[in-house]
Image (cartoon, rainbow, N blue to C red; front, side):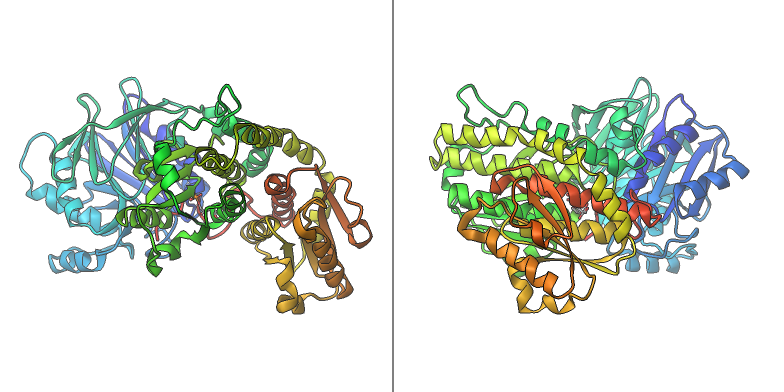
Length: 620
Ligand code: F6R
């Protein structure tokens, strides 16, 4: 949420910052802005709307060439998406520029204090207060090196809430200063040049060498003296170095119209990469990154899976697999609710947090709550170097590569695979499954990349169907067992991309109320379990299809190859390869992703950047 870019070095900062903003626009697109320092003067330009609007303004009133600059793409929280609320925010004398991601919770009191001192605010944001406080602390600070960094530390000690701040000052034309608390910030280190970004996408075309900043830290980057990191009190801290394991090409569209289409197509590879290297010589699972001892894992008597949105749906599916394989009770909760209802947690509780970005504030806060209660926390995460894995006791990374489209696709499928691995690993460690049983399921997991590729190769009919459904007012999704969370995920994708009302239901619940909304022609998408699934749940879903059809629904049925029972009741039949029941969501989700993407495209919408949304939700 909000993209942040900073640069200092020999290149033209205007180009580097704008390129970084282009790569980070998926984090927020309510406004964009840039500031540079050239010849001792700070100049800023900002504009509401997408980055293209800013680029138009810059074409008419170009900034001066500079070797230092900062840039921001905004997802509005405080203050509407207008020019005046766009970042950077400047101090009253125009010498200090600040960009901010997060929410400064005590901004009202701080703003009143600044106003009492005579400062006139020019925006409605919480962020602007940081610019004025920084300028005041700078003025009050002692002359000498690190004056801007000292001022930043003074300001950070006064701020409450979550924030990443990046500042530049006309008086220190070779220095960038940044700070973070519960909000993302990474430093890129090139040859004689430095980058700041909310994530590595901001600078990946320039360097893969990165430094991770910890909680409550300030980094001062001097073009000639290099970088130094301290805590908010000024104590020196050694940042963690790492090398980004994907390249710039991974963050490009690669010939696809949308990032989402590319990311859907990458799913077979992403699943294969997530499975890679996790099987030992005897077929057993080896999860080295899970830094919990076998003894700790044997002690677990209850599991919570906590996540948001699509990642929460992955957690709902994980529950079926983990309970089935380990017999440990699993509860799944949306992170934004978890800590507020005082969940019962102790040392024997394992909390699995799932987050593609590793920065989702709701999930981070749930994680911290779980740790305070002494529970053990295992993160399933895609973004290396992000906050959630850093603060967790253990981590299992998905290897999906960068996910740029706001709607999660390959992130979701790889989260499912990681959840399966965690469930199997627990079963193995606790002696619930013999090695050959684990190996058999892993062999099934290894068939998933081909199964997903097969689904993808047959999507022409889904695309044609999407064009027919593009004007629908409402679309319902039904599923049972693991098909139920898939229905929820299908509905979420459609809502967020196509802005069509959609709801997912447990198919058996339909008759308890929701069936009343089914009308003549209402499209109802049904995810049918395998005929081999337990306790004839298949037969019950086939009955549910008949029930909605009898009320005039247009039935769109997703069923596995060879399931002939559904044929008489399907107005449209989408086939998926035969897959073991618990793993089936990996294949049945794919047509729903394609459908949502194509409907949105047909409606002329921006598939990668749906309205009101942002990738990586770093506010609560
Ligand atoms: C939906 C979507 C969101 C995210 C949710 C959690 O397509 O992308 O619902 O799944 O905001 O994000 P992460 O996984 O980054 O914690």
